[in-house]
Length: 496
Image: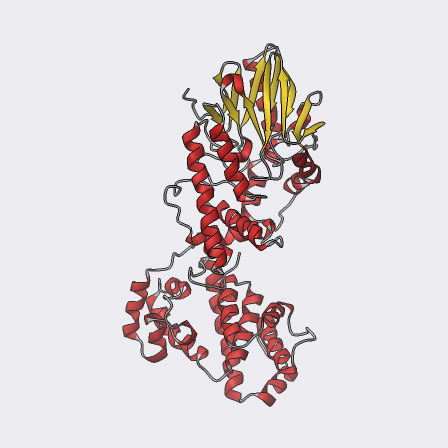
């Protein structure tokens, strides 16, 4: 049976319904209804009270006299249970693992909080799109593990626990007499899923279980009603994520770069591509075995993964052509990199400034001079890293964390750059250098004591170079942050 993918209640088999919410993106989940006489079992409520109220109203309009006596929550994501309070008299069933997760959930409070909060973009978008006011968490009053048969009038509904997979307690809801399966978020159609818990192998196994069931009509947690071919496609996606993430992890490739490099042939039209970072990160977390990278960290990283440049970097060939207008080290910046960047493609920062060729040609000799000047390599990178931190430039930080390591800065030293000059583990020379960066950033002038300390250890030319270095990289950070310049794909130090 072809089921239109439109908002509302659709009969998909005799006395069996799907409630669909296009386009199936964040918070737009599906629900199901299994009816026998005047009794009904509802599969999931929705993200908010208003959404769930409209779901129940549509049931009343289409099926007057039918009472929802039983509610099954397929798992612990809020878009599948935050409307439970509107069914206060129902028996609410979930897996034991899902119920434990639901009892720990306080995300709705954050989403409903007033004012602006420093949250990842996807969370900010949900706060704008949905009304989270008035949610009173209503937990399951019946739990199970494994399988459970539930009577709905004269019908039997089979609940099958397949988590941990998408979450810790995922449940399939099978109506055998209708050949219908409600999968919750074990199946997404037309969009990337989210691996919250994993392991991914159990999710693949859940797909195999679905393929072995006697079902014809499958209602995913998000997306249109489908059949088994779409389950096979989805299974292939999970296998590709598993295999690609495993190879990248073994090679030491950071999560962000691994997500950017995954082959999406066949899945390039799927929505919510930002979730790929969560999925690659989940496989890394499983392989690391130490809880890293955490999901909150990955959510923040999605902003970088999905950032759209305001000025897209010009093609490298166009920028490399400018080398003919330059000489020496400045020309090598465009041809094949210079110094530590030898053999690398033209940097995205240069390719972005290249929208103004004359400016780039004028700036390149200064950058080349500063990077091969009088200051020792280690001191130069220490100053640039502090500048990157003070200006909030992730691009500048990621590049120069890599260069700083090459210059001899240890991992702990790079990490404590963000703590500033007063950290007790700095040498007096490093402390003076970091203090100089802060004074130039805050007041655009060196204090007398800082000047004196610098001039005792450096030549006047080196101090001048330090001031030019901080000013130049502060200017470059402004360009990077304003233009939203993306990290270079080859950057091995880029982490989510």
